[in-house]
Length: 290
Image 1 (cartoon, rainbow, N blue to C red):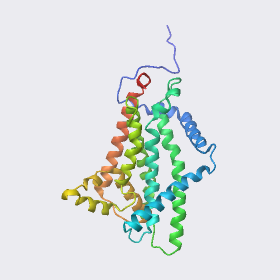
Image 2 (tube, rainbow, N blue to C red):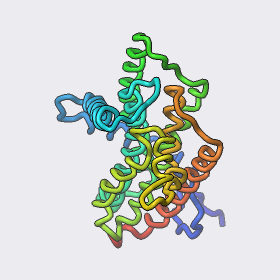
Image 3 (cartoon, rainbow, N blue to C red):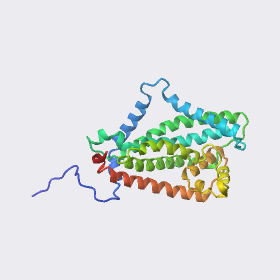
Image 4 (cartoon, helix red, strand yellow):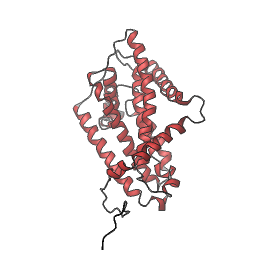
């Protein structure tokens, strides 16, 4: 008797490490559909539309310049303080948006997840991709101010490692995605974690050298309260290394270490695959607990 050949077979997933990238690729049309939906809904029924993504980093950079550079007197060398802050804020915003938007994936999409099957990880991936549009708008305004300061005689030039800037942004997205998937999986059982995300992200920003040089932060923390050395907070913060390396690439200012690059690379891959592992495990039972 000839066996029937089925187009698709739905079978239980028993392998915890089965990430099934082939299945994700087969749903790429749905992925781009979600990206398109995210982009369209962002600007629907808004007055200023994409201008909001220009206003936020500009006003944040202005406030940082007034508070940290003018009042607190933090020096940024030959780099204009506003441009220094704008570079850090622009890179940080992409990570923040990826983390906060993916941290409640199961909660926000429980209706559609309970009705139709598709690889659930497509949803947070689509958020990371759609956030690239926001980042593109913000990096454009950074380039405009960069050109303004350059043609006004400031000694600023991009570093020879500028070609690695896309890799840096991919790393930011992967860390945000990995942490977001971990938190999203935990939110299915502990709803109050959503309230802690915004607070935690705000604290992380101040520990990630967004508005001051990494070396200055390390020096200040090395002689902290009671004479204790807290510089490890910076040394083991991958976001701080990424932001410092990003400013080094864009402004040719600051420094980076081989340890920082290696540590950040390992941390990025570890968090991404750990988040994917936990997310895949949670998607099998989340509908019973959410």
